[in-house]
Length: 110
Length: 110
DNA sequence: AATATATATCGTAATATTGCGATATATATA
DNA sequence: TATATATATCGCAATATTACGATATATATT
Image (tube, rainbow over all chains, first blue to last red; front, side):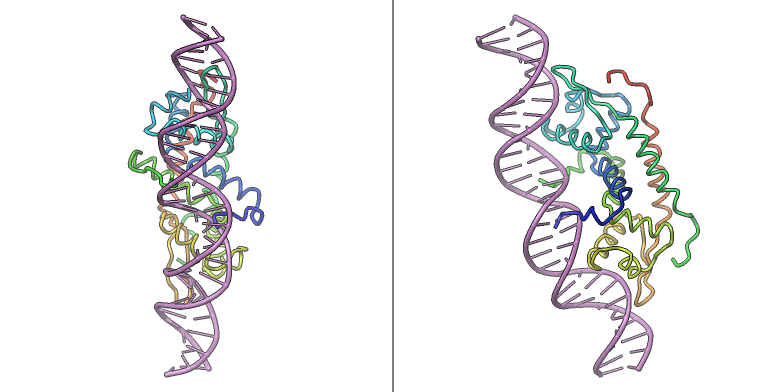
């Protein structure tokens, strides 16, 4: 169906999934890397760095904003995008906690 | 198009994106949590724990196997799934490194 | 006011994902 | 050999995602 049954999962599971979506496309990974390293901030610079159409980049930025991992500040006629450090920390915590739940070497069956 | 242009991104960017896909659906998050906490290992137990059809769970397991984050061991007629600890560590490293690339509080524009 | 610049949104096409019932497969047991 | 059990795969329908050209919007500059 392509329609995820979000209502049957916990808030945490849905949030982890949503945050993971920010990283689940190489273009968004590239955008986040550029923003994280402050190599680019202005939308147009991101478009220049990426081999994608302006409309496509804008769409990915919109998705990242929806997730909350970045925010944009209007500086007419430009828009400056930055990592939302609060959400970034939230993601770091969530994934960190997640990875720590595995007891390495504790395999009981396989 | 729904067709990602993987060839224009780096190996690392594509790998991060692929690993993130493992976490980018709440059902897969739930599966990984169950496996990580060893609350379930056998496919049928996962199906019992999740409010999804057996075919759907099997499909998610297949995707997780494709990514490499889990592996399955046949124990006829059952299949025991486990976290692939090597890939798990790879993911932990990759995301950890990624999160560390942000220079917190170093905003130059916004 | 007209124009240029930067970004967002619209519309559309192609492909991917999600979900499930039905069915296939493969092994153990009667 | 027939049957039961567990899992995988097939086929389909609905929805989501990705990508881009065209266009809209919004602000500066001439």
